[in-house]
Image (cartoon, rainbow, N blue to C red):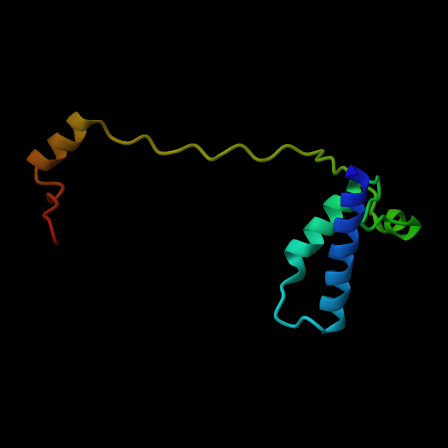
Length: 103
């Protein structure tokens, strides 16, 4: 009995998909019916997915590994920022103008 129901669902979904693709059911979205068809076909061991042929295997590019033989240049030495004491001293001596907001 279970097999009869599965065959009925498979036939029903196949008929609706055919009618949809033929243009007889223009208002129906075939996505759900296609899912039902695929699931019911899978219960019988039928795979509805497209299988890749020999052409698909030939299209793949072989992987190439690039080897970098030279090491990158070391970063340039950074200037050492003056200490807080040196900055305060420069402010007190008038060598540097203090920052003002909005200026």
